[in-house]
Amino acid sequence: MQNPYLDQVIEGDCTEVLFQLPAESVDLIFADPPYNLQLRSELWRPNLTKVDAVDDEWDQFASFEEYDAFCRQWLEGCRRVLKPDGTLWVIGSYHNIFRLGRLLQDLGFWILNSVVWVKTNPMPNFRGRRLTNSHEILIWASRSPEARYSFHYKTARSSNDDLQLRAEWHLPLCTGAERVKWNGQKAHPTQKPEALLQRIILLCSNVGDVVLDPFLGVGTTAVVAKRLGRHYIGIELDPTYCQLARERLAQVVPLPETLLSYPVEQKMPRVPFGALVEEGIVEIGERLRSLDGRFEAVVLANGVVQAGEIAGSIHKVAAQLLGVPSVNGWTFWGVMRGGKLRSLDALRQEILQKHGQVVQGTEHIQPSLLGED
Image 1 (spheres, one colour):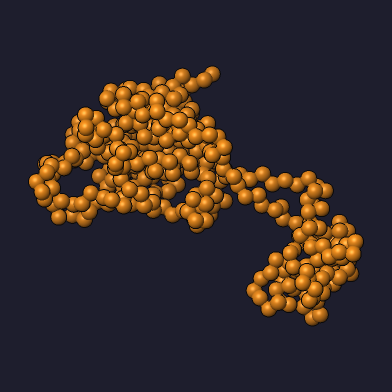
Image 2 (spheres, one colour; image 1 turned 90 degrees about the horizontal axis):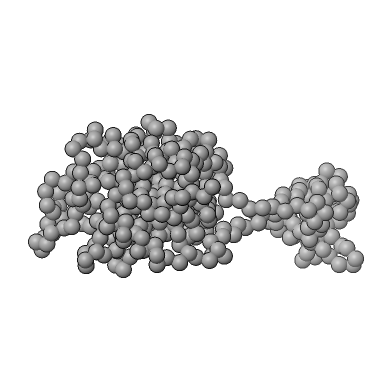
């Protein structure tokens, strides 16, 4: 049965709505809860203009105990709706993120990473009494240590110039045309940039997955999810924010599926040189020749090749003959077939075709494969 809440902006209190959604029905959650900033006075710039700080009622709590009770309730709701292999991202500042981290662990979540979002255009500290608050922290967590969560590791690498993506993300604040306006003013004081949500959704979900935001605001998470071919569920208490989110979503055109696939480089199945000998494709005692015609080696019974006093693998012998650290022996050596010199690389294709071996790429990474805890 289709989830009736899919692709909907639900007006209501997430501490109630989360317990109305189907259990274990969500693949990815992004939560941007109230930070409990505890502002005690107005903030003014040096030019005597007032800073539009976060002083909304939804960010005000009477005590830490009240804030903790609120957060425990919505986190319990998130755990209820999250699939066993789903993950949760929660963002905060120094005001609340440490309290959220403890609550996550108390509720049985397994923390995978903390990510520092470094703001490339932070608001300065106008009073000059503290360091500029130029970052926020995200916690990425699964429901358990055993969860087979989605993480597109190769996508993370390819988007980062083929280097492992670090847990320090340099992204600007939401500004300019991306900032949603209401009566000529910014509609939401803590609207997150689409680039942040795009990175999370691309790396940690798949096309067709369900992405939930229990504090939707003006709809950024849902907008990015829809554009990237995911289903969304947004929960928001403020009716004006709900209206703005729905208006934004009405303008979103999902990207073509051809642009949303994850092409993964096909790895050649590992074929040892000895397999060519065992299957009679290369014979014991046969002479290998380098493709440039300069070197020869004889094939021994155990799959080792020997050139004069040098013996070893096809790679090691080629490297020693050339006096270099390493050589790909498959493309260095060849054998005569039909009066022509054929590379060993071409011959090993015969084994692959004979056995019908095909490697299907996957980006569903388990923690052990990444060398993580």
